[in-house]
Image 1: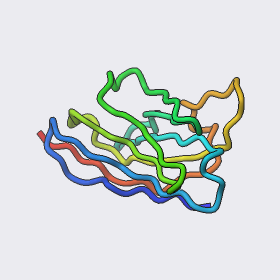
Image 2: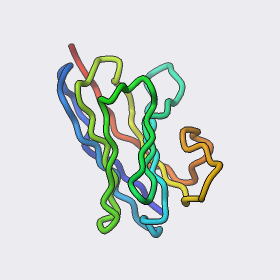
Image 3: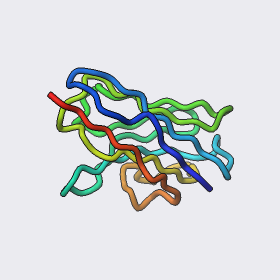
Image 4: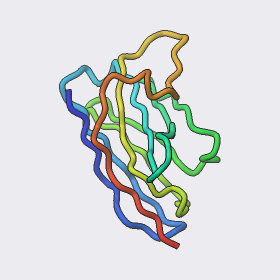
Length: 125
């Protein structure tokens, strides 16, 4: 199983980026994809999760600035990031876990079985 993130980079505050997560080695349409980020010196932080049917969950602090999407036919997940702030600077990683019917906390990093290496996002003011 491989997860490969791309799309990170350097962007001015207020700008946008779209991260991609290419997944291989599993039946993508059956998996939940989570996005997490980790800034230097800080703990890993939940950003969003998108279920196999497109249902999404977001961290409260995002306040609608980010949106997750997926293309099951291409085994791709996306994180659309808008109105970026310097405090969004971090390494962003995608993760995957087989979807289950209920009772799972998809905001917990420990829930996920597979992880990508991450892509750096740097926002300057």
